[in-house]
Length: 197
Image (tube, rainbow, N blue to C red):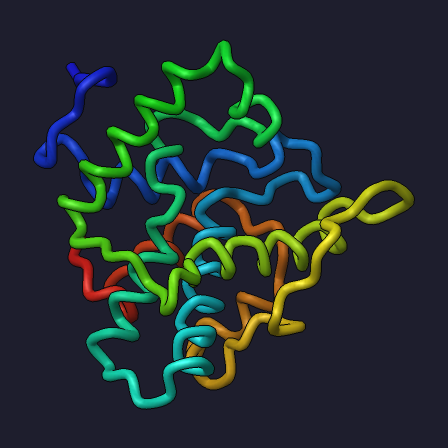
């Protein structure tokens, strides 16, 4: 059985992550489409992050862009095993144990998939890309009156700019079916992140 409380590097598989994330809704399901998965979100963050890195570090090499894409694609991978909790819930003192376990998963995932911190001068590009996609998602997935993300990203739209390639059409659609999101996640993992199934 899977050692949920203490996984090691060999326990974590790309196929499992893609499958589980594609069936896990963002925002605990409080969205207008029937489905908007963590897998779909992760693909968007990965493309945004790659564009963000290229925008700020134009001389960066292709290998580093691949690492940036991988970091964006896998930034929520722990949720494949621990589920996605709302941010206010995660911050509650009663969930200290959950946060500690999440940090353990993040460390094991970083080792398993060679994930590196991406940024300059203390600026965490992965976090920036995640917030930028959050800004875009809110307006599309939760329209209507009410509070929205208070800050806009430094780049006003996802800078897919030529990097999306064959995936550009599907990235213009929101709320992919689970099997489509899983397939997209896995194809992007191979094509842009240098990962293998």
